[in-house]
Length: 353
Ligand SMILES: [Fe+2]
Ligand SMILES: [Fe+2]
Image 1 (cartoon, helix red, strand yellow):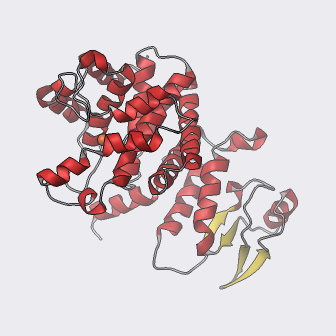
Image 2 (tube, rainbow, N blue to C red):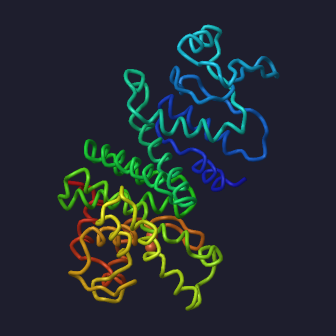
């Protein structure tokens, strides 16, 4: 394996960037989970779990080369069990590989929450990485099944982002920079949501409800692509006119998917519907002109374009923010709101407020 490949593989399996013990243990867990051709149990450091919160999976301990069951899936795993393991000098348990995704989900959702005193062991870095990893997982579920229940989960993720970003604006750079090499669509959707929230804040949109609307519209903006034929979505080369015609339906189809949902506001739904409109009337689906397009939708549009340029895709490497801005300025300004463009440049220049 070449050095470059090794780095790429490490990035893929190490979504946690902190240097603290929790981040390191999480990276070890994700690395083991990423091995697809193994049936070995996966090690889980005990300091990652909280008493009485673990899902019903069996825990094994290793003696020499053998594994034996320490906890049956239905048994409690509380402070007493944890202490007795630690007293015996054991700092990790093992889980069956089939239980990996469930434990991953537990770590991403539970560990990232503030849960009394124990949460102080988790660094801010690790917590933010977990939030990000959780957002990608939820987005994946959303694209597999955009049900009201999954949309509600998406809204929860987004309000988590808003919460962090309102209290700690600099967390934005941390959230956005993590490159976890996930499937483009999920990575892109989370990125658009985050950039939309940051832009909204910069424009002095201050209520958390409005910011969350921007976030969820960003997360869902391309949900209509779930209705486009997979052959078109995954086509490696350029699309022919007919295929392109179908692809362009995705903003309308997305809106149709969401329009009867009662949890979402109309402005969020219109953000999805209008994210490919252009002020000059050349966009789709309706060819609207400038003042017919809401600021919300314009925010999604610019966050979308910027994020597509700065995310790795199968056919093009991610551009740096600076390269993306240059390209946007030279050939894409007709699609963008000039003031929003200036604000976005400032955000990436370090001016969040
Ligand atoms: Fe789109
Ligand atoms: Fe998009």
